[in-house]
Image (tube, rainbow, N blue to C red):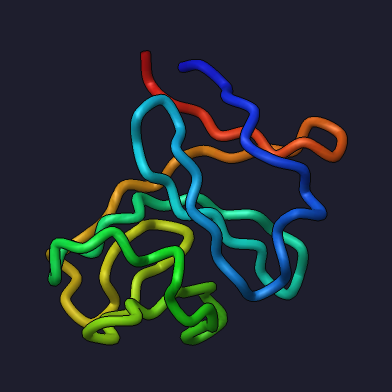
Length: 108
């Protein structure tokens, strides 16, 4: 696994998503209200569009989530599984902070 520098922590607004190109992959990054950072694949598997970074950040039963802006399916920011249709999932990428720098891990 290789860690890739993506952006500064302060560039991520709480409860908002952004898209970053990480090693050729579109990755949706989210900073939740508690300050945690999560990274998912940006492709919405239901619509085929790269839009999850523009989804609505929230929670369901204490689990941080994002709802697709197109069809509103809700995905766990922790596991990537769709909470409405559990057999569907998006990739989850390890993310960490190195000081104020957000890093995402990709398999090489």
